[in-house]
Image (cartoon, rainbow, N blue to C red):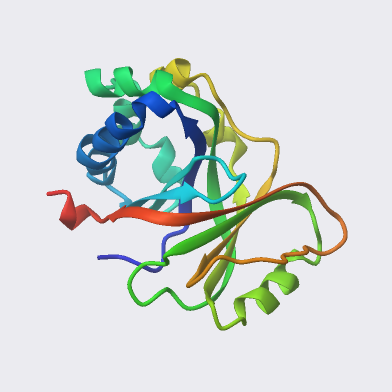
Length: 212
């Protein structure tokens, strides 16, 4: 079980049609995450639920490197979606999906799994790394990581993307805070623009050995 050392990330924010929610969870738990984490280089798949005005779901995978998301085995999955995937993806609303490379991290991995995650998608912000270090020092924060978008990989067109119709967001950076409790009163430094700041609670986490 690899819980540290992943340098690549695929993060996907989306709402799901209310009348398809249970079917979506069944598909994602039983087929989609196990399928993805069986791809070489994948270390974990997680799904979180949105809090308040956040998108309904945050789904993400951590990999050895960002280039894993451009590998032949992974793209083969994206370009040959299963019947259940073809059924599920049209129920995604307001989708935003990006591929990221880790830039920095501070703090320690959660003892088991972080029950809450806060994501900040943003542009600019030269003081963001120092600000995040102060947030990571809070008692209820396990770890803070900053990622930069890999635009080339994020923009690869696939059969799955043609179904759900979304693409990369406009923000170049992602900060991910792993927390023991929801965060409040987050005020990023001056210069941060195009900010989407959202909280989520953990619904499922699967590792490759669990999907066997």
